[in-house]
Image 1 (cartoon, one colour):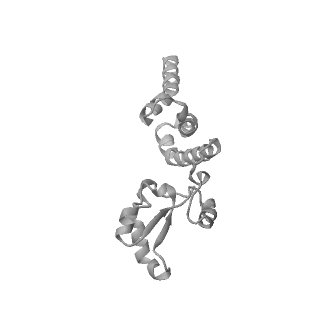
Image 2 (cartoon, helix red, strand yellow):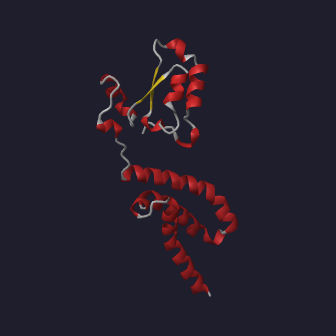
Image 3 (cartoon, one colour):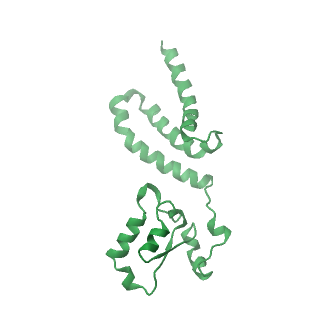
Length: 165
């Protein structure tokens, strides 16, 4: 997906800054920018226009850019659709699980060395369940979905505590 709008790393200010730093206005004979469609949250076309640039939102996927250019900067429905199926969710879950494991491994060994397998299993459970299962949970707020996904862990924890008593 052709997107960098998350977490404020692709904003109007950053685009304008790069246009100025790299003297883009002197390198081209037009004042049009093709922006990733998913940058709409961070890049405001009105502000670009105030600085003399026309912002055009392109397709969702970079692979559709050539066709978008050949169609005279117009998008068809396929170029506007975002695919986020299970394979994409699985890849996101895997990268999230690996990252969270690397972040959590030292605290797990320091504070719960007897429980390190369970701790890492818990990290992987939440990484995968949030990506693969959460869209089936009927709540709108992510907080409630997270609480619903925490219930199995809570039940397992409570049953293991009662067994040790």
